[in-house]
Image (cartoon, rainbow over all chains, first blue to last red):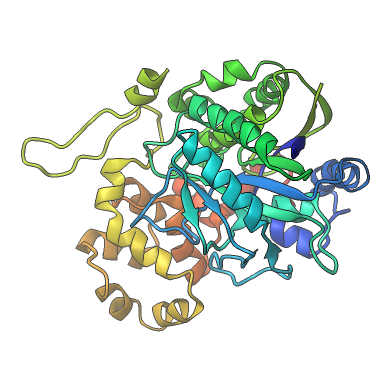
Length: 279
Length: 135
């Protein structure tokens, strides 16, 4: 039977992409971010050794448009291209998919009453492409297969935080029913506090972020009870992305322990990172 | 809790059936919901088309001809001409992730757009940040 071997919560701030590509790892204003990821990447490679990773993220109007907005969508392809977000593509290899596991998850989730949209074509934007190379090796090719899982956090009504948590629980059940011994990691991306529009652009609430980083480990139920407006009022309108971390947390055991945590808020976003394993 | 989630949006269609922008009660914040998505549909569609390099070139070469392909309102066209990012978000139904693609096509980055929305110069905005080199 397959197993969820690690859960990661990670921001997916777009500017990190070009900084990573330009190897700004030791520049003073970037170092606190990259230093946080280095041990997690090493830990994943040497100790956790996932073969596939479910990455829960949102598209930012890069591949999906507003003509059709699935609340939840899953990619089922052999490989995925990057989306062009207005600046061309980053120097990274094509992302390898795991269609067998993707289709299995889609089937199990739908029969478990999570009516997820199935996508045979999906281009990946920074929501996935920023955290992926921070966590996994890609030279010369990716050392992990990816199951992209998209959540609508752009156009309200959004799925509730509770619904995201329950989706995670359903993912865990589905993974445990998969008839191969695949080691699977799950990453919930987005946030933390940030607002990118209006006069309130640049709003950050590091206290909220620190509380979230604590509760995601110890009391996720409290986070699942939060309403969108509560998150947006405190942490900024775009911080509502954090509900995607609850998909990850729902897929982990009720009791977990944190192995790594990092937090840095240099510009307009609280950039958080946490790694947890089942107790 | 679903009731709390539902509570967010105040303001629906008014008696004249003209779409009203909802107010979620957070100052300086224009939550992208049904009201904005309806008003901004053509604008956001144009912005999304700029994910294609050839379209970016066409847009840069002749904005008016490019905009004519989409059913924008005069106000939306004018706000694009003026690079008035706040107005595009606040009054025109633009979603920041889409409007960003217009900014990218004309050479304004997110932080430039943001400082304008805050009503500050770019330099003044940077002074409010913890580590301005991380951009």
